[in-house]
Image 1 (cartoon, one colour):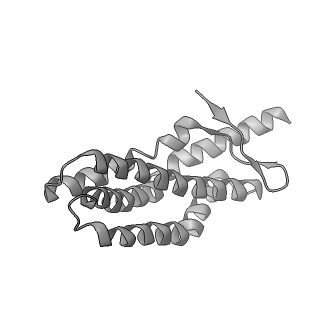
Image 2 (cartoon, rainbow, N blue to C red):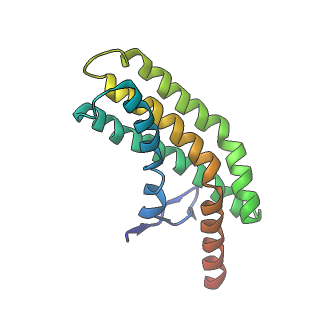
Length: 156
């Protein structure tokens, strides 16, 4: 397992993120991809797979934004659960706006034969993954913040 330490904001160390933590939210987009491609009878070809790869990056970006806010709130001294809830409500609007903008941008190419499967994959996958990330990830994120707090307390 590769772990990395992201350092920003004047040397303050952000939440230690394992690759499993960030990559665990990427499969949530596959639920939306399947929900769109099957009823539309759109093929899962090369272009759709490219859309899934782009979708993974968008989903991971949203989770990084959320985890960064959780870490900032936890560093301010909030209880881990309160930090997760506050960060989720505080970052709900920016995350939903970026997801909506990306989805609306794909509508223009959804009717094309070549790029249509990619658009379907990105639109539906991003909407479903964003909603699932914001709604269902608070428990695991709270556990991760508690684990980091225990590790910092053991170092002190």
